[in-house]
Every structure is written in C-alpha cells, then in structure tokens.
Image 1 (cartoon, one colour):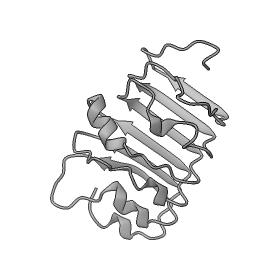
Image 2 (tube, rainbow, N blue to C red):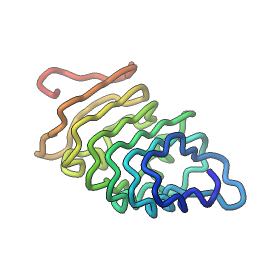
Image 3 (cartoon, helix red, strand yellow):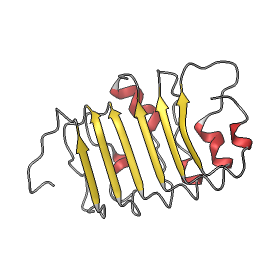
Image 4 (tube, rainbow, N blue to C red):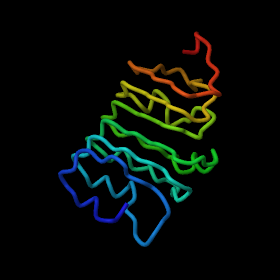
Length: 159
C-alpha cells in the first residue's frame, strides 16, 4: 500500500490493505495506528515481505473492532510466528477473522486472556491442528466459526 494512506484521518473502514513486495517506501500496519477512528481493518498478506513485529502496535488502534487477516500464500510457521509475535490486541476488538492461517499450533497471542472483549472468532482454512488453550482462562467468545480446517482434531470436552 502506498505511503500516505495513514493521512486519511477520518477513515473508519479499510478493506484490502495488502502487505506484499516491499517497494520504495510502503505504508506499514504500524503507520495505520494514526487513524484514530479506524473501526474495521482487513489485511491480506501476499508474500514473505512481512516484517518481524509487524503487528506489535495493534494495541494502539483504540477504535478497532473488526480485524480480518488473510494469508494469500503459504508461509512457514516460523516466519508467520515471527511476524505475528508479539501480536498486541486492540482493546475494543470484538471480531477476529483469520483466513488460511499457516499456524499449526494454537499461538499464545490468541489466548483468551489477551482477547478479553472478543465476541466473534472466525478461523477459515489453514493448517491449525488443535484449539488447545494453554492456561486456566476460558473464552468469552459468543460465536466461534471454524471452516475448511482439514487438519483440526477436536473433542467435545475440549470445545
């Protein structure tokens, strides 16, 4: 995405923010924190141009309620974990939609203790094998939608 999009101070919805091949001086996810009224953000990760810590300042997105992250190509789990860690959660996030997530094990940044205001969690496609939660905390999610997860193994007590 071109640099300068973060200057649209009244922007509330941004769909199709693409992280791709790094050219000249692209706009980064961290730059979007300047958009104080941004309520919905949709990000598509197109290649391995994802910088480590790309999502570390999401906590600064004070108004963000809906976040969609789509992986367009298969990245290695280690490069995905590096880019998403530390994943800081926006304080008002109500819906998180992860599409084609290349992570196999349930990441710490998706723990119920971090997503305290989350009401809807959608995971569509990807390599996820388990929903095992580390720790004692339980989810407050009201709607859980799991689709196209061919490797997911889950038993009823776990759910």
